[in-house]
Image (cartoon, rainbow, N blue to C red; front, side, top):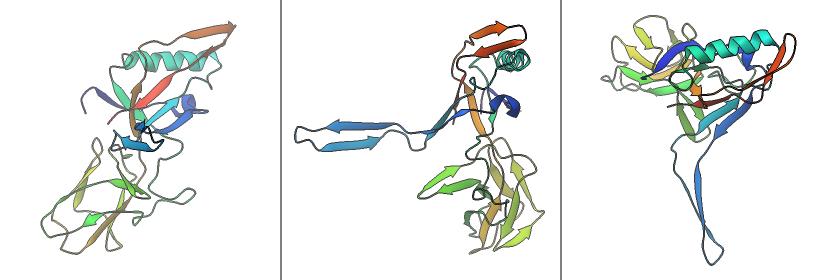
Length: 204
């Protein structure tokens, strides 16, 4: 991904973040009152506001420093979505069989990390290094594979045999950027300040 810094937005600045997935739908109301609905995005896009929880000058300065290092909107970075950051169900620990990545055919050596939400499959492109565990037909695989943490692509030295189920467990971040090239801060007292709004938007 061009224009991306492989660093994570500080968790201490993200406490109290407001946001979640967003969809883009087009709705046309016909003369009969019936509606034609269509979506223009194949995947949802997540947005957050992380400004509301920053109330002291030290954290405000830390946020400004992070913003400056990313040159505003220019460079993307990692963000841990408090709603969705693990392959496991909420409250569960990661397991090597959390998510099915595919079925071996004896030829394919690369598999994309993904997470299934009901009928929607979400590609995972920013896995957390060291968090990924793999299995073939439920049996753990500790070697013979490598992972591109910048893309979420899993590569086997030898292709899984035909009919073998490849599964994985992992933690992951979202790739985001700042929504604006400007931060507006208010210094309310000695050592205290706030930022009205700092938007983050997911990038694909």
